[in-house]
Length: 106
Image (cartoon, rainbow, N blue to C red; front, side, top):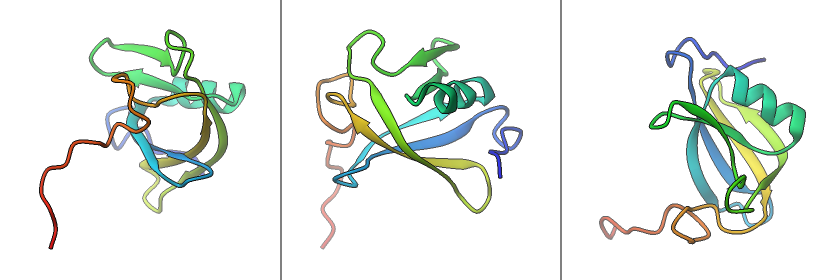
């Protein structure tokens, strides 16, 4: 199976997890080109919606992500990628982009 990029106007949601801890590190977008570059290079590449360009995760920070596995969901419109991260995933320096509590669940 391959991602269905047409469903999301050329993009698929991509969830990045730590292959060892299983923590969710970040969520980003991939288009067909960034997906192909990820598979070919073994490191994550994404499509920046704000900059309208490809970006290699860690190209500036050095915090690259080595791909361990790529899994597609049942609708072929979301990718789950397990990685070995080389530093924090978040541009703020946090290990994960998910560190802002919204509401406590009882």
